Image (cartoon, rainbow, N blue to C red; front, side, top):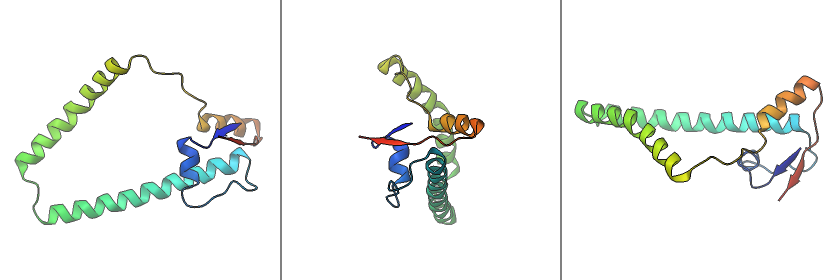
Length: 118
């Protein structure tokens, strides 16, 4: 399997340390990516929780502002998706998915080698 160094999952896996030396199989790479993403999500969750506690303890959000925010959160994303699809047109062909490749390899009970490309 070929992994580009410009892909998001390669950048996420190398966020905390460089692991390319000696780790060239898909199984190790996949679990390294999973734990990195879980760690990043945990940090973001704690940051959001801290902001929530800070703003709710100050009575920062009134009921009117909260109602408007909820309505906008429901209406704006579908509109944005619709207009982006109209502007951008047809979606490009998706590259290989690392999750599906891992599941296929696990089913075959092998761990294919990874080749890092620029």
